[in-house]
Length: 224
Image 1 (cartoon, helix red, strand yellow):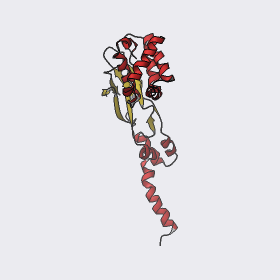
Image 2 (image 1 turned 60 degrees about the horizontal axis):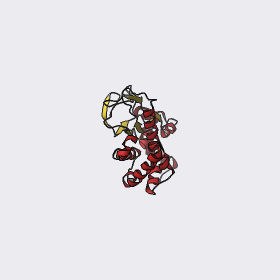
Image 3 (image 1 turned 180 degrees about the horizontal axis):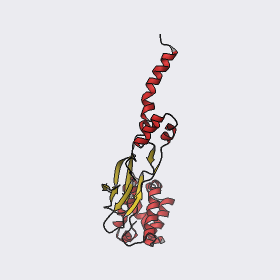
Image 4 (image 1 turned 30 degrees about the horizontal axis):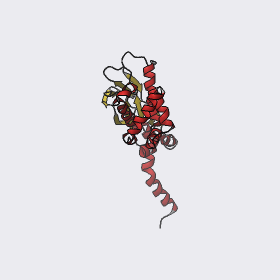
């Protein structure tokens, strides 16, 4: 016959792997998937001096910060100014709950990197032509267009699917400038709606929209 004390002992033994393993490590893992995109092709990225590939790129990155890792990302492309910044990290909510449990459990999370997680996990890198200041009109225009399209691509897709709308009209005015050019942007984008609506991510949508402009002779000068 099982006594209450024996039942409690068995329950504690069953929970031991969770307590010793680190809650955040078990539930959220020790890696994050990060995606990088840029406004120009051929951008190469290194993280802490290690070459990771050419954008667009999706990588699985360990959160482990032991050994002096800084998560410093460097982006380079011929003819463009090098961009460099540290990948931001934030406290993992599961780890915050975990540090108040057992010393062993919280220690595991610190060592594995689960205490922190990367945030954000999607990056768009705005590369500037070498010698061009970030405050130059062309650079500001490109940054604003990319920001609008990346943040609102779902609304733009909805407008494209129904043949027009407020978001598309606003974006067209930003792209084309005057009334005639803006109307032309709407016309061309609605005609190319099937390909634009099929884009599954914001960076892909931006690339397709820019390619649509590039392939239209009278709008090639309005590229993003």
